[in-house]
Image 1 (cartoon, helix red, strand yellow):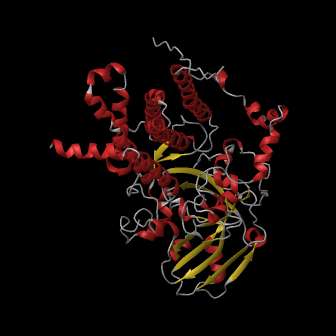
Image 2 (image 1 turned 90 degrees about the horizontal axis):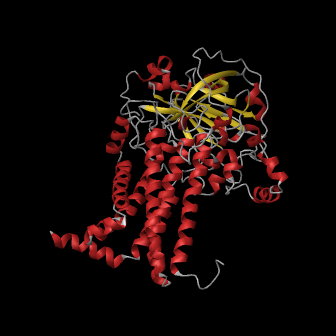
Image 3 (image 1 turned 120 degrees about the vertical axis):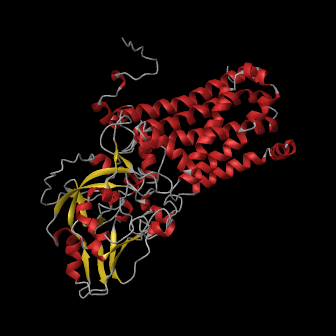
Length: 209
Length: 336
């Protein structure tokens, strides 16, 4: 049935969304099941922080891959899954921050705040998190209509967010730079697909002043 | 009154896999005929694979042997980090830069034959063979706190002998101001030295150093075992240094050479990032790592995510009484 060629676009979107839900949720359930039961290696705290951090980054990159692919292969319906992917990116980022606060710092709020201020890589990560939260909050259709043109402006911040996340990752490691560099390269590649748009955005910033 | 309505996603006590089932999961899989594929994967390479999470019980496990030693009375009543965690959470980049990798990628490591050479500014340089490491000195257990520079810590029952006893044996001369240690360099056995990505991009062989008076302090231990047995490779077999008042990276593993030298030697992490890792690297809650606070630490014991294990970090990791005098005239902010 799934292979039926008469599958409508909305059917395809429906199936794709189910796949996204499963692919995003099952690893999380597995992760926390193992972590709560102390089955995730000697330091489950480090593992859940890294897993959700990289997971959020992966989801951000996948979100940015959608429209170039939709354009290239003329599959317009794909654009409809971007919000779901973005919301999962936010959810993973939220868990990443929560893991740091709840399990690593164990709700030492003053330490949490001072680390955000004092450590540049955490500052940058936190800025990215605040921005992605703003995008998640304004993702609903009703708000999108309400905000009109400024909605698109706001959501163009995604390009900045992914760049901040790439720097946050690069800056956070001790010496193993190869995977952060690989991620940085992927980020720049995905941004390069939008070079004209980003350049225009950048120039309009100055023209407004 | 607080009435808790469990959400669908909440885990119940009954959701927990019984330990007996968890421990026998290999048999379960075998019963279902799944093991064939898994064994193929494991046999094809000892590199990291998708099954890492479940490969705690690898088919080829390094054999450790029981040691004779004087036990530590543990008068401070320190709670030990479980052996299973001490041996699966390791920073030993020679076997992979992720903490779980050394236990997985080091099980075929050959420690016998082994040669440890002690040379340099001394009257009687010697070379120890594998058997000498455990027979040359009476072994004692020492339960030490281990504080990693990454702000986690453990309590480990090491077995070994004082570095001072070993150094006295070679009779250092008056030019011996520092002690320089070197880890084995053998890319064929140590995949992290062979593969830059796996090895975390640090320079090999790993090198470390101490000032001679630090090395002669009775706390500095040459360890050949833990939890009653010889060291497994991931913990630095067959012989490693343990300097409990310094961050863990000073406690160099799988040592092949100890040299008495005149000048302060270059050390691996200091070379890589001098602003982050000093030569002294004494545990100091008042001097932060540039990228994180050193004021507190997470003590790894048993318990999962909810272990309330964040504790204050102590100056010199709690060994100030024994070692603070070594640094009396020094500005510890400058010499971090």
